[in-house]
View (cartoon, rainbow, N blue to C red):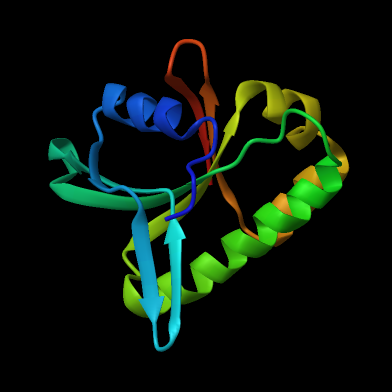
Length: 139
């Protein structure tokens, strides 16, 4: 198993704090001869809607050394691969990319990155690593 990203447990705790139940850690995506692992699977029952929502989360760290664009290429490619297979094996699950508030403000608010995210239809979870709180969901 791959080593979890630095914010893995922060995001896991933030989801739990937000009322989600972690169902998979990691969430295995298998189709044919391809096997991949996203960071987390979670679900939450919304009583008012009488509905159970299921999500898969990939946590990415954009802070630190290295090119943001290289990290973005890797994250969006991985997200696209996960989404392709999730549509085959578990289409009811929504896929999210979890990023820190700092990464969101420093990089993801730029016009160019917003265009990439919108075109590739990437859903984001923005979290505060200090308070282990989810600040924003974007669809």
